[in-house]
Picture 1 (cartoon, rainbow over the protein chains, first blue to last red):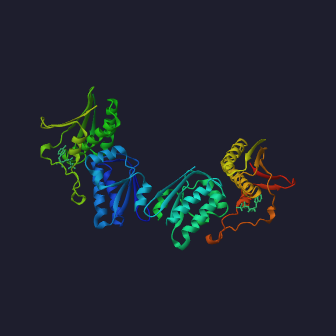
Picture 2: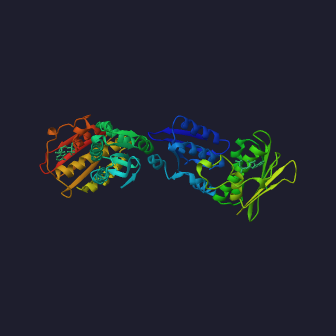
Length: 111
Length: 111
Length: 135
Length: 135
Ligand SMILES: Nc1ncnc2c1ncn2[C@@H]1O[C@H](COP(=O)(O)OP(=O)(O)O)[C@@H](O)[C@H]1O
Ligand SMILES: Nc1ncnc2c1ncn2[C@@H]1O[C@H](COP(=O)(O)OP(=O)(O)O)[C@@H](O)[C@H]1O
């Protein structure tokens, strides 16, 4: 598991590798929270190297999305969501809350 | 040889593959000119799949950079410049006129 | 039949997932079904640790896998607190973002992902969760 | 010694580049040197087509490669207009962007990239350009 963040002019990119579950989800939540506390609400989450995401992961993303969208100050965009994760997000109507991009460039270029 | 363009919120991305020489340089020039005529002056040129660039290519880039920087309306950024091309750009002081980024995301994220 | 016991810690979730994925692969499930099973088991084990055991380090989880020509079956056993699944409300799908709580999809998801989900509380000191995925 | 004749068209630049790269590789040049040679030859051939022949379709370019233990040598022959290289100004390096012309680095670059660059105008109907790259 690793979490990398990169800062761009208009957004910040977070990339995590490995599993997002109850064991690793808090580290991701902390990363997002720290960014938001520093005033970064336009966020891109690169999921290209996530191979598993439980509902713990969704709540982290939902929580972050709430924080970002409040006062219209930003948004969380998802990039490179693996198919099987996208399917499971759809199962519970989760994908409804996020714009999903095919690649990081498109997501960063959206802001 | 192929030239692909993508439009993002704050910039346009141009990606070319293969050689940039006197045989292919005009097509690239036309691509940049067309973009600039449509008012797009913030440009990222992805060189990840360029395997050769002669001085013809540099003049295309210089010409485009001039058009973009005029009236401070934009800039051409280079991304993924292969090492040997970067070395040859340095030989004639060409790299002096361009900001070079390690990847497209950083370049798009710069605008 | 293959069985393995894991400590009831969140750090077991990865190893449990691998164990289940291997068994499901051996049983001939396709990639999507394997992922569904992994996800259902992850949710179930997280609930055991959080709700049945009330936290990490309070017990074990026994995982048992089995398959026949028609289906792949999983049994998860814990010695934690029992509960009544019928009283658990179904999460609202499609609610506005602001009104979303911050949890409560595990049971719902397990049922969505698996063909059968059944809690056995017949022994007072052990809960057995049985889940089946059709091939 | 290996030699090949190409039509004096810009579409020959790719094939010439491949031809040269192969020969240079065979001669044992490293990757960077091969690229330098390719670049110098590309600039030279572009000049032949543009300046010596005054455009595409007006003649041929003969490429000859040769090597010994110390160096890799290229000869390019054309039947176009001759010129005096000594009268060609060196391009200004580091000038402000706006004042840059939009050409004129080919000769300069060939000299930078190769260890020796020599035009032979001794025959009135043929120009021979000899370039050498040390191993
Ligand atoms: N294995 C279990 N043991 C005890 N209680 C459970 C168990 N699984 C679920 N529950 C109860 O059901 C509720 C809903 O569970 P779930 O849908 O997984 O959402 P969450 O775990 O996020 O609350 C839990 O809050 C808990 O009260
Ligand atoms: N092979 C050639 N035959 C005739 N004239 C040449 C040749 N090569 C170069 N020249 C002359 O030298 C000038 C400078 O050449 P060069 O440095 O390659 O820049 P460019 O070709 O972009 O003008 C050319 O404009 C041309 O007048």
